[in-house]
Image 1 (cartoon, rainbow, N blue to C red):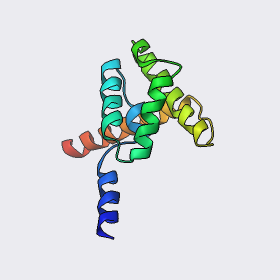
Image 2: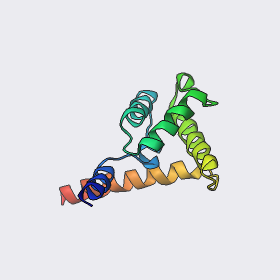
Image 3: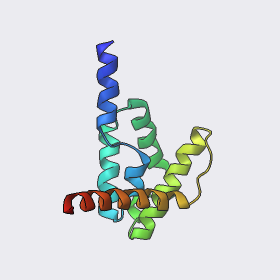
Length: 115
């Protein structure tokens, strides 16, 4: 029982979700985040599937050179995983939603600090 709770708390304490990938704005930031996911994703099964996807990805990470490439890569990757899991294909707008959420959080934090 304690081991199960420890695993759940450990998984929640790390930021391994689509939002983190979608918020990467530079190739360096994206590649660093992907490296972290590749090595440390808490769910071993998910990590192995992610590593396999990287090996067969139709848009190889080496071709990601611009901020626009980062957005396209994370959107396409999200949808490739969705297809594998029989989930809905997400529109490109999902990236805007993630960026808006991140901006709102940063703004709220700065606003609360200032006042």
